[in-house]
Figure 1 (cartoon, rainbow, N blue to C red):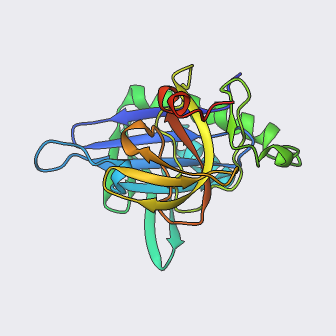
Figure 2: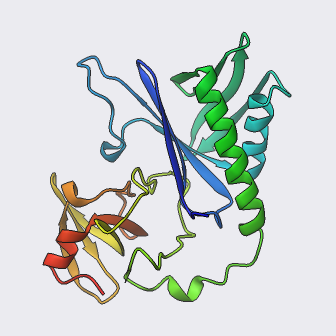
Length: 233
């Protein structure tokens, strides 16, 4: 059993990502991106696209539609005075539409089935693991953990910018906890727990992050860069 899940669903003009960072988190994130007029895709790392956070009850309602127990479901998310209408509905017998703000995404029959199975599995895991007291807080202050001893991050903010696009860490990617203290076009400056400030090239960062300063978060970074700068345990 794994602790994280990530799955993408692409069409001709819109892509949708489902991501669960930890089975102990009582929510998932859903990302939506569009193809631009020049043929390239929006990038979440450039703060493009749309991200929403769905709790357990919303996962249940989405599954009600995917299982054809309801023909449609809708809600509205409000964050920082911005309201995002969300709806999930059937079109005929073989298509489901996700409409999130101005990001419409149609799922084919095979995509519907994959999403139904994935959300059912994630929901079952979260019911078991996210409804028990958190006993991992004593590990949160570790600045870096090996991929075999992952830190569970429980302070992800509602803006969804901590979404990780690549969750299969292997040996090539490591986690680093810190706070953004500066940023240029090609790098961000991160203050880590030992008091050191380090500049990290954006090209080596393989996760989404919150660009606001003074927000503690976890970054997925190329192992070679951390090893080169003696930032591994």
